[in-house]
Image 1 (cartoon, helix red, strand yellow):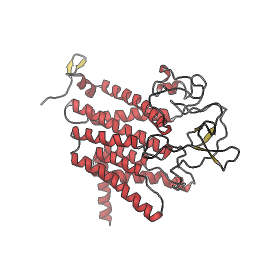
Image 2 (cartoon, rainbow, N blue to C red):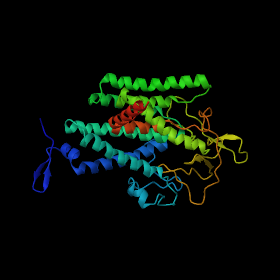
Image 3 (cartoon, one colour):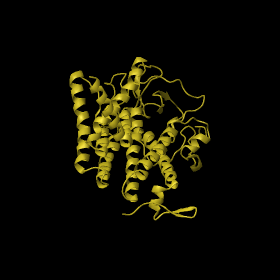
Image 4 (cartoon, rainbow, N blue to C red):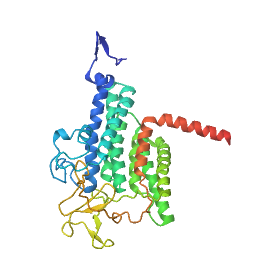
Length: 377
């Protein structure tokens, strides 16, 4: 059996193939970090543009305050944000810190996938690197879904459908799961949420859990298998409660204020804003009926006669020139939700990532705690 270890040659370490070097040397960790940061930049594009129904490719990154394109040397993940202190080089408009956060998440999770799959994995080096790629695109999908759900309370089918098919196919092809376990996981994940949502709707008369959560759980179940679903649901529910309870007690709301105009199962919703003359009268954001507007990061709408204030590479806001924000009505499709509703998708996504990296350890710990409780009873 081949042993994948470097051969010492003086002060140098010689590797049989480039794949061995990627999987076993410190150079591989550097490549994984750069890979994650670069993809994190693209995840930002999806998070920002998909809800607005815009192309992910054109136009290139540019500031929509001064309309200047973001130069290549100002588009380096993480580093450019720090060097520019989160502002446009040309006009000084502020960029949202979310962009650096997503790039940092991409970098950190890429390293986690690298050490989990490539360094600690079993089998040939090529298989371990393939597992790294599959795991990274799973966690990348979780990043995109979580942030879009936070902003719009919608989990786009255009993201979940390809993830279900591609990740399930990859996990079966790489031998991570049997085809039945993957298919059962995807089916059980969606059906569980569907049944819970239907029962809740029949009992309460309004929607309490969206089917987008079911599609997200289908992605997780198809990739991690049906046995992972109870732990994912437990972790997601507990973490959601830890956030929701203080929010409700403090009288705060995490309800999304951004309309979703991307690809969904339904027709894109029309953005609505409030009239400055009559704040109680909603008006259309159709440019033929009203001046363009931009939806800010904190769920407010700022009318603007000179053009949008939102950047493709960031959500830019002009210094000292912000109009006073006014509350806007809930985006179309979310009117039936309670004001204290909390998006469940981010917590399911977080739980899926946790189970990927620490599922066996978590099961062991939970089992130990349950054993102690049963003994006390």
